[in-house]
Length: 116
Length: 114
Image (cartoon, rainbow over all chains, first blue to last red; front, top):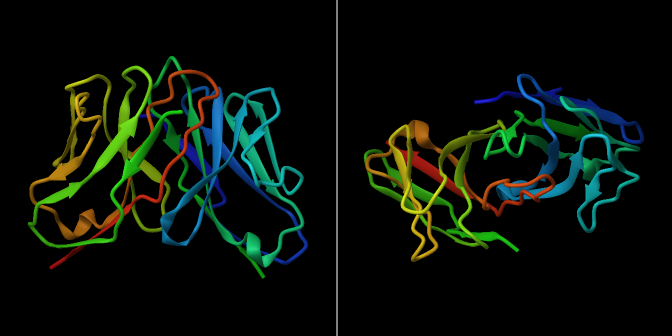
């Protein structure tokens, strides 16, 4: 299957700073990427859907000014958590899909964000 | 819209026990169906898939049959191992067009003990 690489795998930052998480499709072109936040007891919450070259579509309740998503190329999407606070600490996971090429989506390994 | 209902966990089994995790779906048409697995501290990996009705997906001893008549895609394994301890997600009908939302439920945590 195709490979999606997410970086960093973990990050600790100070409250008030911004953190950028990268999601790359290594061997295919991902027209659509998804960003998730995973809460305790494994619940996966879809935060936003991004299509290459266009603005991300955010789910209800997700602050688009706080969670900036950029999908500038077919192999890279980034999630920037701006002015992070301790309540933003979580496990963030990206996935990438190529409709018409693959039926399934491929996931990155996740990023553990801890805001202190 | 398309969705899945998955059995809640946690599920605790002894090694070599039989596993079933139920999943039912609602969908328009006959989409592909998937099971993903998440090991501790990692992202999700595709475990198996079925692309049409009556298809059986299988991998690593796990199986799931796409049953149109009951709109189900239950995950089964005849003899679980400690290494199968993970969270299992029944995924919504597959991405079939650009921009389809890919949403998941809470998953089912499986713990296998010696």
